[in-house]
Image (cartoon, rainbow, N blue to C red; front, side, top):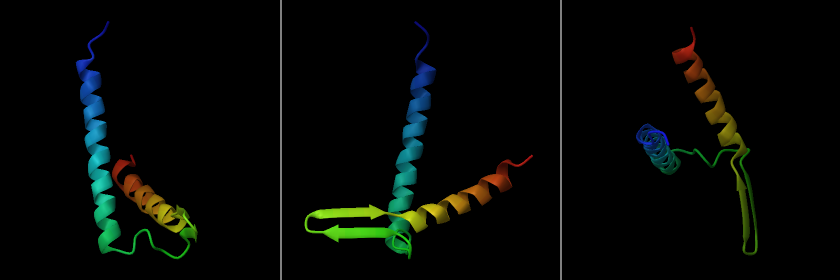
Length: 74
């Protein structure tokens, strides 16, 4: 068996990153219109609710693409 301590550190780092990204998105959703943009699909009938943030996903994808290209372009 190999040394699992480095693998454990990687998993903890990924978990911490996901935790803080989730917290960031929760805060952004409360203080901005993020998640309630025109183009986000929301369907509610009876006790069934379907929500798909299409416009929000496209906007975040565009912003992240531009930022990552600025920082990691060689």
